[in-house]
Image (cartoon, rainbow, N blue to C red; front, side, top):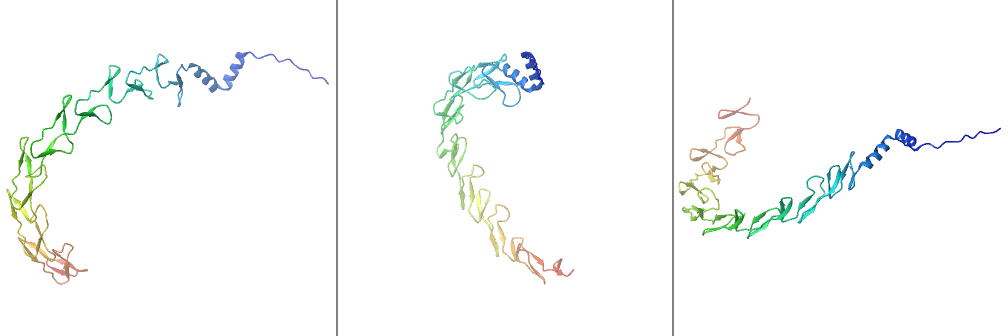
Length: 258
């Protein structure tokens, strides 16, 4: 028994490419896409298409080199000019120019602007020394002044505060500039003694009478009067009034069973 061997003709290249494209359309697309990527560009990490490499920018479907001006450096961002000015410089006419720092000033932490030294304040394009009057000091920010304790600002000057008897000067930048000693209260421009009744004590409150009745007493006018407990009652949580023992209920001035 004999076997007939048939000769196989070579397959044309275009037919092979067509067969491969039909079998693997994604591969054919990727090959076509890679051929369209311009020089100095790479395929997008996410999605399709391409993007220019760092140091290049897209122009007319190609990637051209970023021209970095003096006193600047390349950035990795895909948008913008592709460069930024160095510290102490700012953008001007597509270049970087030095930031002029006046006397008694310094570049701030960003390096994009200047600030005046302590004891100076910005005035136009320069820094002027702060002229603090007598009995004054530089404030916390260092760009202004405040009066010493016992003085108050009057027309850019520091004038001594008249402190009444039984009072003392404060550092407050508002109000009279003084306050009364404990046990006294401001009445006009003076400090008057707080009249604490028997069975009362100072409460240091800035409002009201300035005193509170002791436990077991209640305020009646300007005096502290003993709390009268009816039968089956006790002092309440405040100590200045009463409440009924359980199960009694308050009825006027008595405690009665419900």
